[in-house]
Each structure stands twice: as structure tokens, then as C-alpha cells.
Figure 1: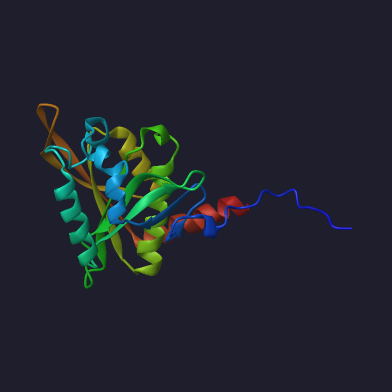
Figure 2 (figure 1 turned 180 degrees about the horizontal axis):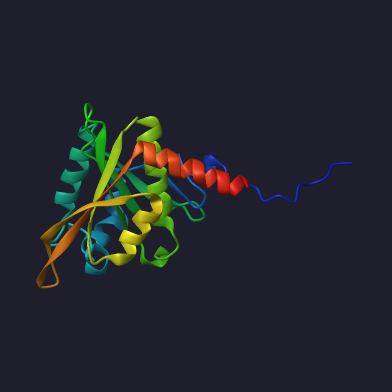
Length: 206
């Protein structure tokens, strides 16, 4: 007599839309020109979304966005992926490794979670974790850096939780809301990434 397992079945990759990196609740796929017809364009013109990003100061048009995506696709030193919610296959944001240097083995990382319906769910941290693993384990990067508004305390805290450390502060480097703001520069080394993940695995297995 056959019995059925009570364990929940994991979502099959066949149901996902061209997945490149797969997490628990989200997956990352390559950006496509068809994404211009979705919510991506609206996010870039929504000040609530772009307030803490170095974009959004000028209006985005379909022409400028199309040009941007074409340039990203042309250069192998940039990897930009769409953040997709697994449950709905909905495009909720983007994450990018940029300025990948073949000699110094470093890169910058940036993220935008544009869909306000998923804010606070941890999708951004999960997407960052997937990209860190990709950068260090598959691209063999030595270091990944990022820049963030110093007064964006929630983001700074989230990046620290991922293993990033503060490497410096650029005084009054960014302009927002009528005033100049400090920019915090953060980074994570491959060795620190591997050490923290081993420590995490040890806690989970303990």
C-alpha cells in the first residue's frame, strides 16, 4: 500500500521563469527588455522607492531605460538580475553586481526592492545573500562593496547582518531632501563571508 509524504513539496524550478539563482522565497533571473512593460519603469519614477538610491533625481523614460539595459547586457563586468517572488512569479525588484574587476577580483553590489507590497518581508536580504554566494563561489571574487546613505539605518543594519562592515564615511557626499547627506561605504571579504557562513552552519547543526 502506497503512503503519501506529509513533507511539503518544494516549488519545482520548471514552474519558475528562467531562474538563474534560486532561494527559499525568491529567485533571480536575467533581466529582459520585456521587463520594461512591467512595474520596473514605474519604480524608477516613484520617489518613495528611489529615496535612498542614487537614481530617481531625474525622470526615467522608456528610451533611457532601454538604453541602460542594453548597456548592462553588453558588458560582462555587470550582472543584473530580476528579483522574482516564487509564490507568484511576480517581479518585485532588481539586484546588480557591477564594476566586476578581473584583476582585483572585486565588485560593487546594489539592490532595489520596488514592489511595496513585499517591503519588510526580507526579500532584499535573501536576494543579497544569493548574489554574495554567486559572487564569491562562482565568480571567485575577493571582495564586494556597497554604498548607502548613512542615515538609512535600517539598510545599514541589514547589511551588517549579512556580514558587511563599515570601511568609511564620505561626508556630505549625497544630496537628498534639500540637504547633503553622508555616504557610508561598506565591504565584505570572501574570507569573512566564508567564516560567517561556517559559523552559521555550526549553529544550525548544533
